Length: 397
Ligand SMILES: [Zn+2]
Image 1 (cartoon, rainbow, N blue to C red):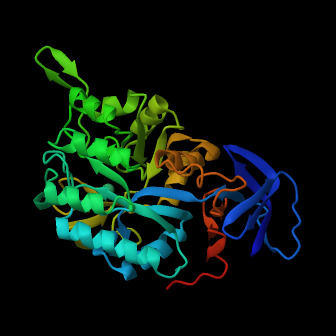
Image 2 (image 1 turned 120 degrees about the vertical axis):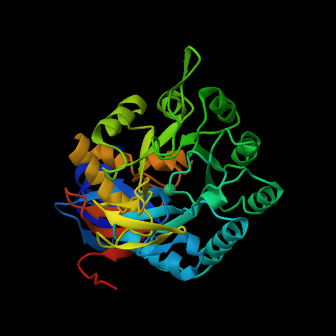
């Protein structure tokens, strides 16, 4: 069993700092976290003096990078993406395909199963598949490919039931026929069900919450808002998401999808303990400004630090890895570093019900650690006790 001791850093433990503390990793678990200097005979020592030592970042919603996406359904793309995101401190992520035809969904699920059962490849861990669609509202589809938006049919249900062990989250529109029953069935098997790309009114959302809906995907993007029916105002997904006690929310903190005022509103309404950040990064991430290419069958252009549909109808997704978004929270809405880190670590772990394994530095949890400076520039990323990214020896592939 290999031992690593990370010493001398500013260790982030549950939103507080242990200055000069140590973290002892043994094999793929955290063996101990100490406010002082731990000495372990035979251990590899990592000196983190002047750096933060943090639980690894967890991205619940990421589609791709480097002109690759999880929808490619190839082992090669899964490898390239997990190595790319490890460079930004992401130790765990959900492989997130957008709306696909049934065959495409099957290919992604099969590819993930193959990837997971293959040899360890030295990047972020993939927690499972987050299906973002296709059971969405047509009118709130945003950049989701319109041809694939549909209500769940018998073939869909069969495919989902065959893959309950690897589907960790599904985003759906609660008002689409069949989705409340689907929410009840999937959530009873431990799948996190989130509302997204939805035109629902409050009275259409509440039955889904009763059925097990627990999260709101990229709030404000593809989300219904308050409308008037006759004389009366009816809240939409945004207002229910910001207030309902059974829900957590995620926000895309690239500084483009949401202006700072909305990011403040979300974190004040929900608290930073119920708001996580996600990248929603698409295949444009890691590519240069001005580049044009196809994503999910539509032409996309990278402009002003975000991916836009080339017809300028809406954003296509972000190009910002989660680690950079932690810094955005600090810069754009004056979020203290420790709170911003929680929104990328402990909160997403709770949203996914994996807080007993991930999201904190504590003995017994997975040895997923990221070491970074005060601007969240990542020095080292450790996944399951293995250093998968080390800036001092890293070369562009
Ligand atoms: Zn997305």
